[in-house]
Image (cartoon, rainbow, N blue to C red):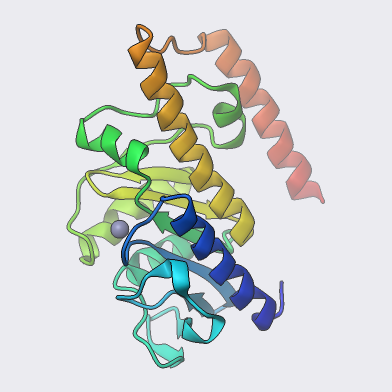
Length: 218
Ligand SMILES: [Zn+2]
């Protein structure tokens, strides 16, 4: 695992990229990373994540208690903890409000159909969780189920969450979610997205399972 100093710098860099790419605006979004079994680093509440400095990050335990830092942890940190509890393999979580992907849930259109080979290979699918009021325990309930089987999902009428074995992986998955929504949208304007056939999806899923087995054996 990275040293705390390196992890702090990387987390700040990921937040800057999220803001620069307009996957978050204003004080939106939150990012966290595991520092140890029961220690996490998370973004503070109420500040623009595009202009964070490493010392502004908050260290907290799995009960959400602040261990170090001047600022309050994100109001959505409970959602992150719910995910870490069901996914011990996850070392980082990104929550953002990618506009195109979020618009799909606002319009009631699912991103789950298999239209892109890379998404089936890397993420399987991008489901949408049931609506829950931000900052409430209902959000944790809604994400727990999706996170137990998926590395990326949409929060209905809200945004997206991506998980990774590193901050980079979680961040890149957020880029993939937004890119998938953009391709979906363009395909819709061209007459509609044609999902991959079940035979092709099955072949991609086999490759995905093999990649997971190879990773587990390393
Ligand atoms: Zn949010």
